[in-house]
Length: 142
Image 1 (spheres, rainbow, N blue to C red):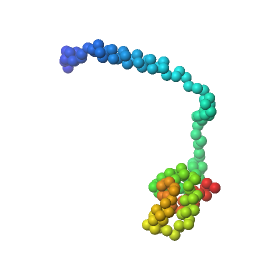
Image 2 (cartoon, one colour):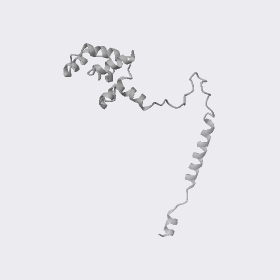
Image 3 (cartoon, rainbow, N blue to C red):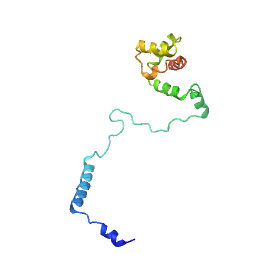
Image 4 (spheres, helix red, strand yellow):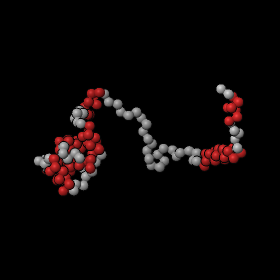
């Protein structure tokens, strides 16, 4: 390896590059003085301080009991169930509608859902073909 070539390819920094670097460093340090030096104490603005305690832990038996009813659901149904669970106010009405239309299946059910122009979230409507799932969710909420 030729060290003479390596030395000759390095170029000295120009005055403009050095001046830009100095201005950038000065700007960054000046910004440090402009930022707030401290945060208000927790609870000062009416918000409770965050709870940083450890999350609850469950024994394997407790976990089995929690997920036993849904553990064997297919993944797509479980995904719809979890999404629909974020609309708990809509679940009882959807369960009632599904019970009233339990005799419909396939395209007839899809047409009834479309014709009734149901006001619920699509994740809740996606559970209408599964009235037993909606009944379970509705009964858990009462």
